Structure formats: C-alpha cells, structure tokens
Image 1: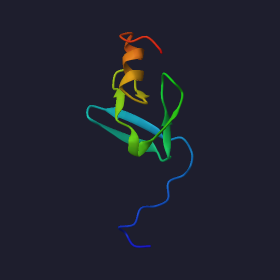
Image 2 (image 1 turned 60 degrees about the vertical axis):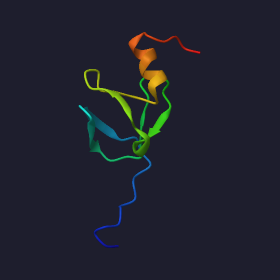
Image 3 (image 1 turned 45 degrees about the horizontal axis):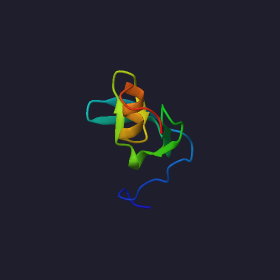
Image 4 (image 1 turned 180 degrees about the vertical axis):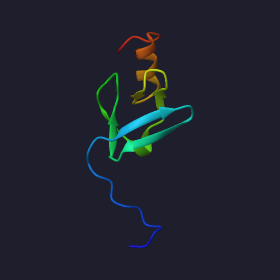
Length: 73
C-alpha cells in the first residue's frame, strides 16, 4: 500500500465535529446517524448538518423537519 491509497474505513459509527461549511472527523468510522430519522449516512454522502446543535441530517427534508418548517410525510 502506498501513501496515496485510502485506508479501509471501519464499519463503526464515526464521531464528527460539525463546522461552518465542513466537518472534522474525531473518531474514524463509515457513517453518522441522522438526528431526525436515525438512518445511517455514509460520510461521503453527508451534506446537511447544524453547527449549533452539532447534528447531522440525511437530507434537506430532515433538516426542515428538525427546524419545524416541514411536517413528516
């Protein structure tokens, strides 16, 4: 393995610090759980989170539900 190859990611849940426009992985893992739906979100698909609440969301629908703007389907 050379230095440009990615190390295999553990199948565990990651611990992430959510920042403005980016996030920092504190404990490596393959996914985080949506704060609203509880579904696993692969880190490479993570696009929505709340910096103040330090919560990830599976998509825009989940984030709007958390903010109380949209009702569950």
